[in-house]
Amino acid sequence: MIRVVVVDDHAIFRSGLKADLADDLLVVGEAATVDDAVEVIACELPEVVLLDVHLPGGAGGGGREVIERSSTGTFLALSVSDAAQDVVSVIRAGARGYVTKAASGEEISAAVRAVAGGDAVFSPRLAGFVLDAFGAATGLPPAVAGGLADGGEDELDRLSHREREVMRLIARGYSYKETARELFISVKTVETHVSAVLRKLQLSSRHELTRWAANRRLL
Image (spheres, rainbow, N blue to C red):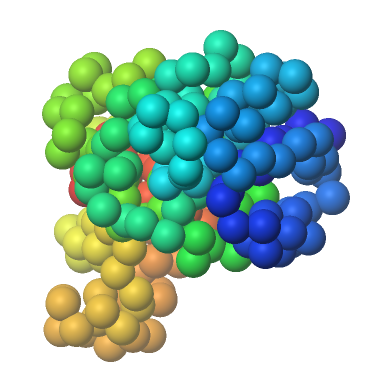
């Protein structure tokens, strides 16, 4: 079981999220304000904190303030916002990842497991903000840089030119239709290339592909 605290100022969202999380995630506490979140985290010592970016209370720093005032826990930001300033703010403060509320319960559960295991996780369109803000991989915060792997060039050499083009667009969050329009190919061809990319890189989903590409600064 992974112990989780849910922090969001909307009770109905907290209830829905708790109901949607996988059975191996145990919600041990919840909070709606900055001050309450800091107190609950200190009391319950969760492994992962699902943290809304915009929260009332405290000094007005929202989710970033919760991270800065807490001495324990791994933080996964969860927000309706996909604004670059929000993403960069919480990552600078020490969050291990950032997922939008458009994600499904299954996707959020997978993200919780990933950050609990030491990985960095971002919704597809957000990884580029982090790379743009922090520059080279060595300049990333330790929590994010820790997931970087060697051998990226060798792995990339396995892909054809067209597969690389498809990979970059899909990793950036483009849909299959958007990718097809961008490259002037059919959706079926995109699907074929994506399957080949995942097979060659030994990945199982587009979320893993996004993380793989972000770790190697290919976005």
